[in-house]
Amino acid sequence: MISLSIAFTLLCLLVPVYVYFGYPALLWSLTRGKPARTHRVDDIQPDVTLIISCYNEAGVIGAKLDNALALDYPADRLTVLVVSDGSDDGTDEIVLGYQNVGITLIRQEGRLGKTMGLNLAMEQVSSDIVVFSDANAMYAPDAIRKLVRHFADESVGYVVGAALYTDGSEGASARNENLYWRYELAIKSMESRLHSVVGGDGAIYAIRSVLWEPLQQRDINDFVNPLQIIAKGYRGVFDSEARCFEETAGDFDRELARKERIVNRSIRGLMRVKGVLLPWRTGIFSFEVLSHKLLRWLIPLFLLIGYAGSVLLAIAGHPLFVLIALGGGLLLLLALVGSRSSRKNELPAWLALPYYFVAVNWYAVRGIVKALQGQTQVTWSSARPGEGQR
Image 1 (cartoon, rainbow, N blue to C red):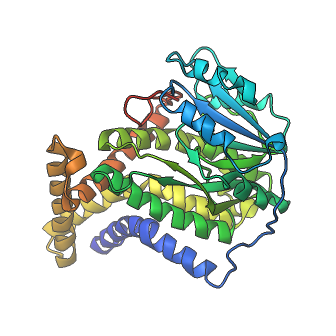
Image 2 (image 1 turned 45 degrees about the horizontal axis):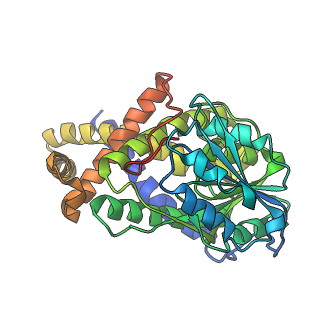
């Protein structure tokens, strides 16, 4: 019985180790020696529609539209649509001021959320390619050129760009989020070479417009939509050279609340397209989704069971689990100290990292529990202070 308890506890503790370290190492091993691109790339110039989603983004929408107009892409092949989810802060009036330079406003009444706004906007799309963006994501001049070149390969259904943070060194929250995002970008690059990058990025990703399916209101578009495309037999690739720039939430509480919403909507979305988890349907991509998403969301459960088992085995006198229990206790203590600070954004790294790790997993649990209870938030306040909702 004791040996079974040891094995089960170790298994639970090893799952997070696999997800955070083993999976990236395995990706590196599987892609080692592969070319940087495993598909055809060409300098094509298809018709493109850039859809910008917003709610109460008066503070940034003008800069975003100027940024869109300055893109290095033929103007006669680029259509810009702005879908406003019932904005009431003057956002729409700013967008209407750009009508004479070819930018179209689509207003959605009733605060239905970003996903329903995209459904509405897609009804007006006639281009070959659609690029999805947020109001605060400022594109590099060649971003769209970099995205669309991958569609020269008929097997490619979506392309994800790299959203980079401009304030990654300003404050503990931004530093932790920037570190995590650099880790994510490395994983995306390896996944793309192996088969497909898992999910999109609402700030910068493109699809073949014919592959769009109207989404349900509770769907998180940049996760469910790419999974639907994979289910149709296409690939999704990542391009680190297709860049946009945005700011982090800049605050631990806002960033954690954002992660709770993402997990809440994503786990429901995966169940909507659960066929991608079947290896006989999607091949090695099913392994990518399982490792990168599903197991990561369940890490808090494995950690809780593993730590509880370690404490019990430590009490029984097993030296290894005494060390694990003490280490886990220290991590929780440091996280608790960090949580009590009224100036979390100024925490030193030795407090910020434990607090960020524990808090992220705790908020992931909240997101999962709400999903299981049937609660899904379809609109929310922007993670950026003083700005709108989506």
